[in-house]
Structure formats: structure tokens, C-alpha cells
Image (cartoon, rainbow, N blue to C red; front, top):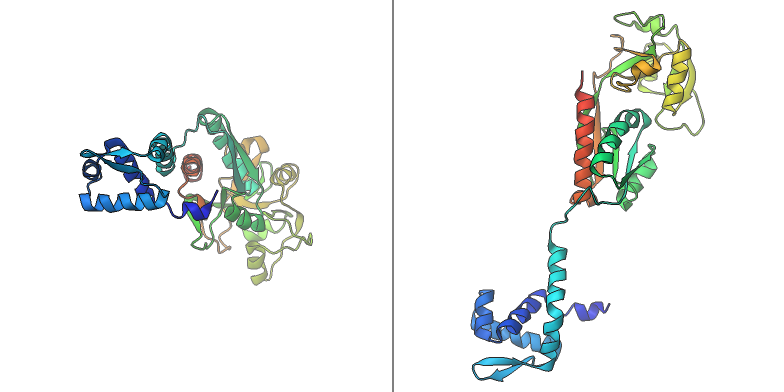
Length: 317
């Protein structure tokens, strides 16, 4: 492709040329383009300079095309049609779309959202594949910018203008334990009672040092009160954490909505945080995408499907 050559071409000139080839008259071509005859004559002169050819010569009251113009008449309709197609708004047909959509989400979010989302997509976009990526802050930033990642579903935080976030609702904090736990029948947990038991800490990201003293907001509040909890295990594997809860008297800080449909399967009871803790009663969840994909019809369709799935899960009582 000769970029220098193409830079000389004005798209409006090609449209004018098409009208001249159809009408073989400056006056009639000007009328169709809603411009004056003198303006059309100037346009014809520019066309002659662009193609280095007279293009038309006088013939009675009209114009007669040169061999170069006759050749252009064969090529021009396809060129203009292709340009017009490029300018049309992108259409997206989920039934015929074949490709992958990359979504990053922490497991505690993905395990609740992805089954319902996949169920919907199997019916509505049978050729689409969802590629689920575990949460990693470094990968997320570079992936969203470069296009290696389409969406991230995460706990809300401040974002720059390069990112667009859509609220999906919020999780309610909770303390998890198995159904046979000594505290399972308590209507309201007390902090001192909780600290009699070991904890499983579900960490969204791995601690490079493997330090089990990894601080959380809960740990910070305990420290302010001169208290400390015993951590039996720190893991970023939610299913492992659930199985440990199932066979021990460990507790875990989670949310009311996680595994709502599977709670009975894992024998998990969720209790409200003790009143001694200063916690917000909701954890906002957002869908994040880079500004580069905001106008994409495919991304907008997927976004709407995620909203359809997630919002009812987070607003359900």
C-alpha cells in the first residue's frame, strides 16, 4: 500500500467521480450532490489533477469519458461499497460469532457467576468460548490495555479515565463455617467467641513470601483492639478452603452471596459479622473494561449478558 499516494485522495472526490460517470454531465452531477455547477467544475478539475487524466471531454451538451474514466467506472462501485460497509455500525450476531472472550475474576466471584453465564451463552452464543483468567493485578492492567483481556469482574476501586466500570451490585460480608460448627446455631456472633477457633484465610492473590501473617482488614481491626486470630491455612483456592471448612471447626471471612446455590452441597453456614467489627454492610462489585472496547458491539453484547446474570445474584435475598 502506497500511503503517500492514498493521502492525495479525497473520499468526496470519488463520490463526485461516481456521479459524473453516471450522469456524464457536470450540471446533473452537481444537482445530485446538492452543490453548484461552478463547484462541480472545480471538483472535476481536482479529479483530473488527482488521476493525471482529462477523464471527460466535451461531447455535445454532455461529457464523454476517456479510457481511463471507463476503467474507473468498472472499479469505483466496488471501492465505494467497501468504504460504505466500513462506515456502517458494527453488527454482532451471537449465533454466528466464533471466538474467545477473556474475563478475569477472583474465584469467589467466578464460582458464583460463571455457571449461570456459561449456561446462557451455550444457548445464545453456541460458538463463543469464555476464557476465564484468575485475578492478577499486573496481568489485568496490561491485558485490558493491550486487548489480551476483555473484562474484569472485581471489587470496586478507583479507576482512571482509561477504564469504564459498570456496577453489578454488592456482596454482604459474612462469616463462614460448616453446618455442624459450635457457633452455627448462634443468631448473632460475638468476636471473642469467634477467636476461640482457627481461621482459613481465603486470599485472592498469592503472597510471594507465603507469609501466613498476611494482613487483611479484619486482621488490622483485631490489632487495633489488641487481639489476634489463629490462621490454620491461607490459600487462594476457594474449593480447598471450603473442603477444609467442611471437615474442621475453622471459620472463614466471606460474603453472604458466595456459593448461594451450592451452600447446601458444601455444608456451609453464613453468619453476619459480629457487631464489634467496623465493616461496611456491602462490598461493591463492578465490571471493568478498557475504553478501547466500549464501542464494540460484541463487547456490549457480552457486557449485557454478564449484567443479566450477575445483578440478580447480587440483589437476591
